[in-house]
Image (cartoon, rainbow, N blue to C red; front, side, top):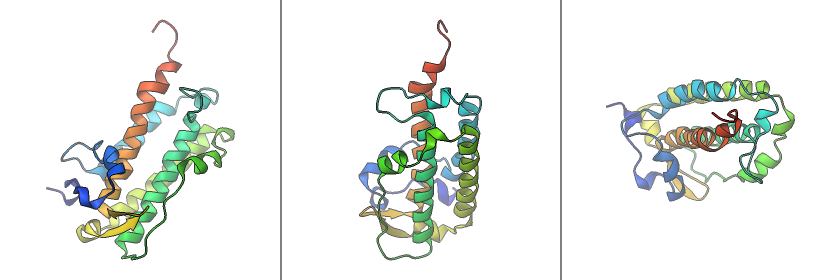
Length: 182
């Protein structure tokens, strides 16, 4: 069995993140899932118009563009945490306020094509980083957002977080774009 396909133990992450970790099917490699999700995200969003990318499935919810930037921001934060912990950082790593990040992202003012390029650049960096880690690095534990977390758990959280948003788009957002009567 690939060392990356071993699901992290509950002691390797805070309970809040279980909803993301459970998005990864047993025995799946979260790094390979990140690679597959990139193509899936492009298939879902790549054809949208600028107007469609501003869609919110309910008042007060993020637009498609804002959610995409949120995915990129979260990936940056989780990848940074993985880097720090893999390299032996002993100081606790801070959390981040996702609503403030999104509110200050100006995502809706940016072209969707630019956001997708930024997503691709971050994904390439994340994959290169995760693929550089040894099995021992995946086992290392640190503290982020006041909770213990392993590099392995972060790799699952990265992929599981995106799986969560892809599912929300498929279930709640993209059906609103379907022509009437379909």
